Length: 157
Figure 1 (spheres, rainbow, N blue to C red):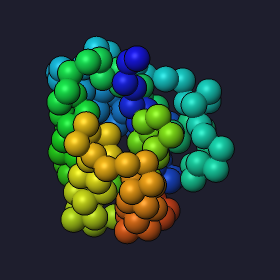
Figure 2 (cartoon, one colour):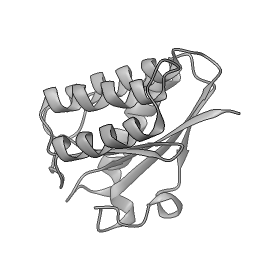
Figure 3 (spheres, rainbow, N blue to C red):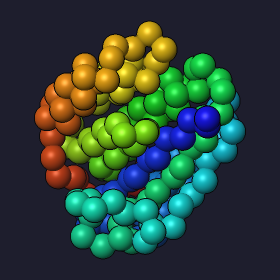
């Protein structure tokens, strides 16, 4: 079975072109890692029910095929974290989904993002705890990370 991570980026009030640029920057960085593929998905088909973005054009979607590398998820999450940290003018909202586990981040402090990403990776590592503990950690990470999104700006290439 192939491990796949879906990444949705959104930015309230942003133009579709700006979100597309942000998504493209992140995709190029992820392709440098030990992953099988990073596919840009058409936003109109991938916006989940209940997504915070008002217009599907405000959402950029990527599907990362992690392959069989034991460290691929950790590398991808690390790259996403570094990329997010470089988005100084804006902090795009993110939704990461793997299997039935979803992590949503918006209006979060850098410390909250670090903690949430660490929890997400632990839940999907071989040494991670059981499904019930993962669900509890997901709820805590979502609560700590905040709701809503910020607007304006773009990430550096």
